[in-house]
Length: 392
Image (cartoon, rainbow, N blue to C red):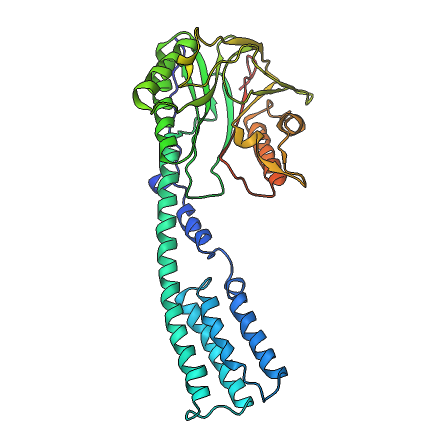
C-alpha cells in the first residue's frame, strides 16, 4: 500500500492569516498604505489654491474664508492628529490672508464668523469624521482578515511533493477584500493513486464557502474510500444534495495519477487543463464527453466518464479556475490567453521543485501584467509534474 500523505495547513500566522496581512488590510482599506504627503496632498493643494486665489484677486476681494474646505477634504484621507496638523497650517494661512486683506479685527463679523468660527467648527467636526472613518476601516479590515483566515483554513495548501507529484500553487482572492470566493482545490495521495480536485463554486460570499466546505469534505473522505473517480463524484454529489441549497453547483475537474506515463481526467463543467511539453508546445485537454457540474448531476442519466491522456516526466499540467482564463486586460478587454502564454513560461517547470515554483510565479506575474495589476475574481493556478523513476 502506498504511503499516505495527508494535506497539512500552511503556517500562516495567527488565525490562518500570514503575518502582517491583517495590518496591510487595514492600511489598504483606509489609504494608510500611502505616505503622509500623498494622503495630505489634496488638503495641501486646497490651501495653496485658496491662498493664490485670494492673493491674486486683490485686497478688495476677501476669499480667505474658502479655507473652510480644507478640514472637509482632510477628513477623507488623514488620521485625526494628521488632520489637526494640516488644519493648523490652513489656519496660519487663513490668518496671513486676512492680514493681507486687512480683515483681521475680531470686531469684524466677516472675520470672526465668516472665517474663524466656521473654520474651528469644521475642523472639530472633520476630526470626529476622521476618527469614525478609521474605526470603520479597522472593522472592515478585521472582517476581511477573518474571511481570509476561514478560506485559508478551508483550502489546506498541500506539500510541494504529494505521492509521485510535484506541485506549485498560486491562489489569490479578488481585489474586493470583503468578498470571499468559492475556488477550491485539494491534492491527496490515496490507495487508488494521487488524486487532484480543482473546482469553482457558483457565487460568492459565505454561501460559496459553505458549499466549498461540503465539496472538499466529501472529496477528502471519498477519495480514500472509492476506487473509481465517478463514484467519488457521486459521493460528493450526494453530500451536496444533503447540505447545499437546490440550484447551487460547483464546476470541477478531477485528475488521478496512478499509472506512470498517463493521467486520468474527468471534466464536470470546469476549465480544461493545459499540458505543456518541455519544448513549450501546449495542448488544451478538452474532454470528449464532459459532464454536468457537481450538484446538477441528477439532471442527466448516466455518470461522468474519465479519460486517460498521456502525461510524461517532462510535461507540466496547468490547472486553473475561470478567474484566470476570464481575466480581462489589454486595450480591448481581451481574456487572458492562458494556452498561448503558458508554454514559454512554464516549460522548464518539470526540472525541479524550484523551477516549478518559478514557473507558477512567472505565470501569475504575467496574468497580473495582462490585467494591469488587479484581478476582479478569485484565481487559482496549480502546476503539476510527475518526475520519472529515479528523480527526486
